[in-house]
Amino acid sequence: MTAFPEKLLQRIADGAAQRDAQREQPFALINEIKATGFGARRLAAEHGGGGTSLTETFDAAITLAEADPNIAHIWRNHHVALERILNTPSGHPAVVRLRDRVLAGDMIGAANTELGQAQIGGGGPFASRLVREGSGYVLNGKKFYSTGSLFSDWLYIPVSLEDGTRVIAIAPKGRAGLDTVDDWFGMGQRLTGSGTTLLDNVRIEADEVLLPADIPGKQAVFGSTIAQLFLTAVIAGVVAAIARDGAALLGKRKRNYYYAPTPAASQDPILLAALGEREADAFATRAIVLAAADASDRAYAALQEKTEDVDARLQAAAAAAAKAKITVDRIAHHAATALFDITGASATLAHLNLDRHWRNIRTISTHNHTAHKAYALGNRSINQVALPTQGFF
Figure 1 (cartoon, rainbow, N blue to C red):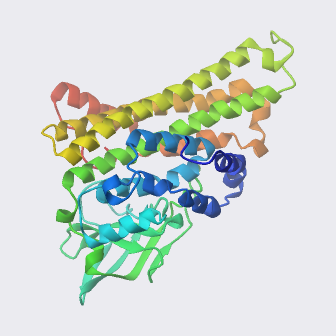
Figure 2: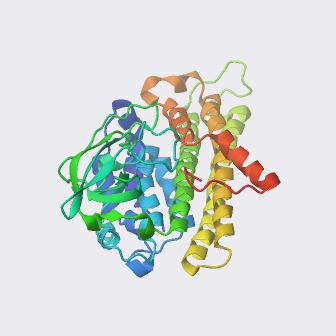
Figure 3: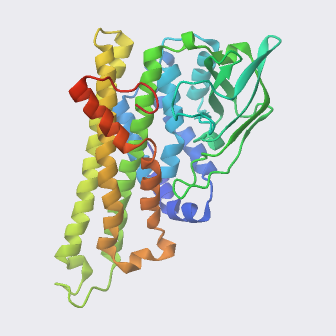
């Protein structure tokens, strides 16, 4: 049984090239996915959710990304929020409310990064501040990257108190003074709602703030690993789309080079071999992501059971996600270029928009530097230096 109705996946895939070319935001499709209950499948069973494993969740994310990587990526921060705060034993009022809304079909977006931060993903204070006002707070600030927030119902907003303490504010999207701006104009992943979030005197109640003690520290660390692995799953989905589109175009190709071994392109062993390579790429990248997801499932079990080896399992999961990124990125970059070895110059026609696969892979893979990941892995192996615990590790 697939996570999504086949007809829905087909409609998503059929319109993906045009949406990317015309910058048509997929609001209606996101609402259809919300209605499938996808957002609650990973929520723990003890909280009323489906209790789906991370391996199954990432498999579904790859399938959705094959249809449209923008739409899959929109769900990343929702799943990070599930791991960081909702799939914990917390009885905090904001967490309880958010679980209920997720069960009702709501999506969580995030407004996190600020351009003024000297170190990406670091632990310093945010410029966005909660200032005490009566029994609650007033929030002012500006967030640059807000993936998924344009389509979300709730926002997960890391901010600082007046003393610099980092906390999480949870607010409904419709709250007065909270504005998500559709101003993301990257070369790829153009439709992820990754634009600016403006916070202008937003009222935040005291029970909508998660203090550091309200979020299990190890669970927050685990959320960083899930953030990275979700991105890699999206790339694996694009690799699958490359194999799909290569097969579709090769099957339709009427002409072949005059010096080719066969008159029909569909019988050309060189072109068929090129297609087979892309199919192998798709198989390998999915397998790599799911192997890393299995390591994350083991880490999650250790978190829930509070086993003695929980730190080791968290590090193993982070290492697996880093290894998956390094390898999947390399395969995907090659596959996106090699697609044109199957299909020839006619594949560069603008209406096909096949360059979106390379643009999307290149954009997603810039989320955290591959060389820094590789360095951290080598340093862990040789010098026993633990992997970082923030910034998508």
